[in-house]
Image (cartoon, rainbow, N blue to C red; front, side, top):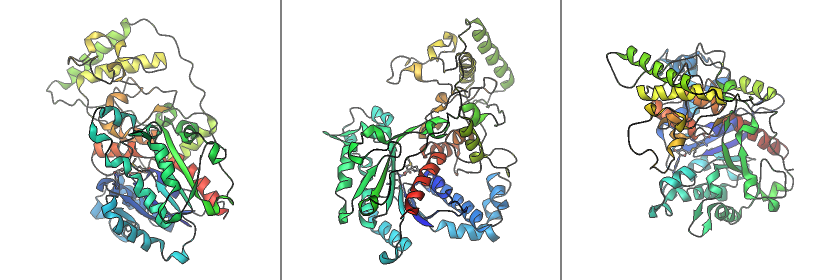
Length: 482
Ligand SMILES: C[S@@+](CC[C@H](N)C(=O)[O-])C[C@H]1O[C@@H](n2cnc3c(N)ncnc32)[C@H](O)[C@@H]1O
């Protein structure tokens, strides 16, 4: 098995894909030696998932795992026997730490220990993505005019990644980041070019050939946009576009042919991702004595306004990829669960429920999300900042329509429920954690620790595991050829 080390590991989306890669005999190809992450709940998620993998790989009893994630047993009561043994083995490689200059010695020591003596190390891969808020378009727009932005240490966390590349010289690395990295500037220089330049001058003299996973061209002919991976082209039901660099150590690059991801035969739609989820209805956030009357009044008001609207043109559904859908379903499916986990909707304000209902009804007719201005004025919010805020109010509400992939599931999805309105008007709510996880292509048996807000945060942070599985396949073929 080829070792992998995962930096800024989040809830483990990237790791999940790599960990699922098997060779033609069915044997697992990668083994995680270390995952570094500073968030304690993401670390708990990583430990639990590592325990699950340990049980799967060792043929241990999986019942306690399912009992725990289904809420049938507490952590304490399942922590015995096979499960405990797997947990103790798994947890040792999840290291909670804030990566940064101050902590380099302890991180380096840990990696040193995990990789073993230098002269006995074989080929291995470094994976991970330095945090992206500083580069993301959303992060930048929130901080326009903020002078501390240029010196934000998050701009430079990629140097921790580079430090480990230089010191430990993995055979291959995979570095993921947001698309905003390509247009992000630090003073006069482009962040992306700075990172590429820094990659050429690694400490310790290591050097890497930087390849694209989607464009088959000589590295010197590559354009920055050639590093953008559009998840929806690879069977993920979500238009998540990310910059991913594949680095191949120069001394082996000549022996490794370039290899790209294979596009799916068509998109996987929101419908394909969500149609098997049981319908659930949101509760209202305010405790009111006459909750049922509220609900009925809201429904009637919303329906009335839809009926008064002229009919809207019919939309031709997108032709989905048959093979891609089959692959997606097989990937997320878990027969051992009696019902989907983490699928309880957030409570909503009664007024928002009415808006969601109308928007979802309209989206069904349009085949795309309606504009907020399509709502009857009686359903507009009363506060006065409509039209004044930087985010145009017309874009504040978005229905994720059935017959296309969803828009990007972001880490602040917990605060942006308006942006993830369920397409079924009867359900009248925003997405649950499990639905967001499905759009991210997390298998149904993947459990996120913490309260709902933290669960959403972890889901939105991750690399879609189904995409990372395909990247893992490419890396496995390359390492296998050496
Ligand atoms: C975009 S997420 C990574 C997602 C991950 N690659 C996946 O596929 O699930 C970035 C993660 O970096 C973590 N992080 C941010 N700054 C960090 C630091 N200095 N040290 C360690 N982890 C950090 C955040 O808590 C977050 O979970």
